[in-house]
Amino acid sequence: MEHIALYRAWRPQSFQDMVGQQHIIRTLQNAIRENRLSHAYLFSGPRGTGKTTAAKLLAKAVNCEKGPAPEPCNECDACRRITAGAVMDVLEIDAASNRGVDEIRDLREKVKYAPTEVRQKVYIIDEVHMLTTEAFNALLKTLEEPPPHVMFILATTEPHRLPATVISRCQRFDFRRVSLDEQTQRLRVICEQEGIAAEEEAIDYIARLSDGGMRDALSILDQISSFSDGRVSYQQVLDMTGGIPSKQFAALATTILEDDIGGMLQMIEGFMQEGKSADKCMENLLYYFRDLLMIKMVPEADKLTERVLDAQDFKDTARLFSRSQLFRIIDTLNHYQTEMKYAAQPQTLFEVALLKLCSLPKEDGSVRESVTQSQESPAHAAGASASEVQQLRGQLAELERKLEQALQGGLGSAGADRSGNSGGRPATRSQAPRISSAAKLPSGLDRYVAQRNSQEFMAVQGKWNQILQAVKDAKVTIHAWFVNGEPVSVSEDAVLVAFKNDIHRETTEKPANKQLIEQVMERQLGHPCRLVTMMLKDWNEAIQGAAKSTSEPFELEPPPEDTGGGSKEPWVDEALQLFGEDLVVIKE
Image 1 (tube, rainbow, N blue to C red):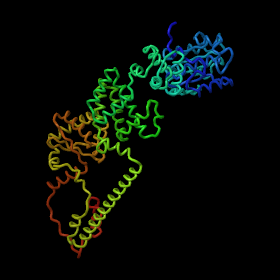
Image 2 (image 1 turned 90 degrees about the vertical axis):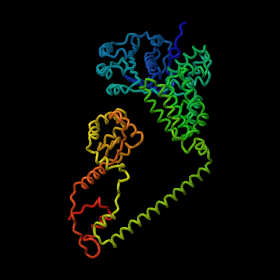
Image 3 (image 1 turned 180 degrees about the vertical axis):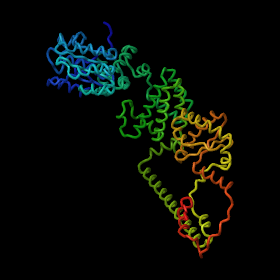
Image 4 (image 1 turned 90 degrees about the horizontal axis):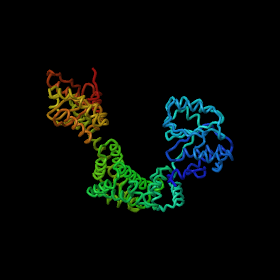
């Protein structure tokens, strides 16, 4: 006899044979039993979860000669002919190839005619989200108020693409992914009936590969049983599907931990020689480190993932990494996985990603120390935490003592000024405390002030828009911070940029961001350039100071009147002493 694919040969012919959708089966059977069937249903869910199968079973149940019955008998002429697809009144339409308004208009015309072979007409529209907007509009009225002898069953994997007006006219059932246990049980039954000798690990791995789709699992089993001549082993499943066992990922994680770059590159080359794809390796490695993180952070986390075959092996590997290391590894792999989607050489990016993991900084000097700390007893951990608390308390007391000394020294100097200074306001101003940003000023500020109108600066200013655009093309996040600065001067190989906001300046000054900006400026200006930054208010003060020193005329001030001990307005001196001369404005 001609071979029939397993997923076709083992398609459920009754509701009790369906796997993993008991909430839907029970609702439909109760509706049939109580004669409360709707005129339109919407079956949505992932591929291979039984949407079309459930639609055909419902069509058989309502048209069974011994029913309508909660289970089709599969013996009467109607059931057998519907199973074979030979009943004209049960019509399965592929919306992907019949998506136009003309096909829907033709359907709407035929709906009004009574069924000729069975009790009720059933229209199963598969992949209904592929219909055009005009086709949906043509279907709306018929879908809302069809003749009493018609039932519509819409099936889709993307319900979000359906208009809300269509969804509201249907009873919606969401099919879920089939669980791992239900899939493995079903695969064991099929293997026994088909005479396939399969290892337990092989069945588990096939169920994991299917990602909750029973049809995918049966297709993989069919393929591997043909390859292995009726005997399915775990290694054969790996070879056929291009999978990588977790032990190899554990070895790869060890090379990353030990900075064994040579061994890591040899393993990658071995994967490629075996026909593994770089993007699939990256995806599986990301899943592996995700499972390591879950097992490290959550007790009994092996229940949260269906990829962990041996939880003890994962726990042993998880002890070698700290939580922060695993977070950084997952972030790095996720970044390069996104880049690989657009890369011409994905294998190169995969190798670069793993080299980057080897270069990540280790915590507390070495991994072995972190492993030792993670294996300490609770008593040792409590003692370590107590000593850390004591150390922090000592540091806090020292800071309080220094702050108190600083406050006393400031008040003492202020008291001496008020009691001993008889020169009036100038002496008070010289002693007033000021919060200065001199620490943030670039070295050689006078040179920048002198060069602010030079030809070199004019050339940089003329190309500034091009520099900003090039930075945006390189990395838009850096451009978002850098665009808030403006060039103010140049000096030799340095470009001075002034910022209004200190946060924008500090973010731009980060080594990675600064390096990218300097590379862009070198390409745009044609010579190596350094990026120097400062605050715009400090730059304006520097320009004003230079202008006063060059253009302000020298004038003699009459000496202040001495009233016998202090200035004429002592409250002015007190305000200057408390707030500083930058914040006090004196009006006569």
